[in-house]
Image (cartoon, rainbow, N blue to C red; front, side):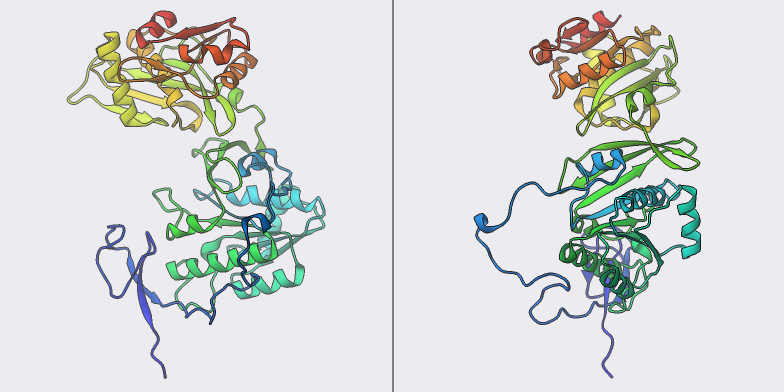
Length: 452
């Protein structure tokens, strides 16, 4: 009897090793190398099941043009996907437990099936009866929606060949297993083999495939990082515990813009789209409070107005604290240094910066709003509630122009903001919209003089 081959793989990065190691030599993580059965040898000639035999073609012989997209019936999901469903796309969606990943895909499956598009929903975590109860909660009634509770990838492939769905939903990939790999479901070898076969299935039959992925306590998708490299699109559903709002963010998309954002509100009958997220983020803004500034920001192709809050204390107990939630901590320290050297504000106490609504601002245009919020809290002087701010701040105290100034201005005016403080470098781009209420500034000192 042939001896069963084993290998040792890192659960963090997927790197394989010939023997057990306490520390992975690829990613440097400790205690992540585990023993598992070696995957079977590839078939002679290579290739993947379900894919046609490859043949080199000249570039001009390959069919081009924009891919045909189909709507999911959920506008916010279509936005994040880049305009809708692309045939053969493999989409991985992750998020914390209970955040609403399955609910979103349940709703999308029902909406798509209402267009008479065959949809197969595979549940690996619940029975068919339990999943039906969840479909009933969201009012699903489509005739073209099929449901199966299954964890064997071979049987799922059999159901796909028999039903020929155009959309396949797998909830979740960590529960599936293939008989070709001897390790337990959720292991590195199983995830690698399953994702490869799902990709072959999606590309070979041009089936749009949604895959739910669990996340670790650090917030990353469980399994090797290779999973995110293999799929076409990676979506994260984010939200705070006890908060009804959810943000769907694209961090990878081969068929559309990355960093796109969709907004939802969790209700008793499922996730409801938020058509005006700017108004949502500003709905509970306190009137007349110091340290509060409205920032005109950009998420993907969408302009958003969000509230930036700051709290500055005048006394520090020991080493001053610098805490930022929803904004980069290193960037906060940089802006504090600019405030001290270029504007003469000595912020020596504890500093707290927060972006309301669970948003995270990563773009440079959030610099000037943070500066304004810090100065407002330090001076204990509230800003005009009808002022919106955006602009990048340099180390020399200069205000630099940013992209999308016209769209930010249109969004701010639509929500009733009467004055908009913007970089002087964006004046020409915004002039065609009319200069009424626009206040261009060149330096941090000039911006603070205008705001206060």
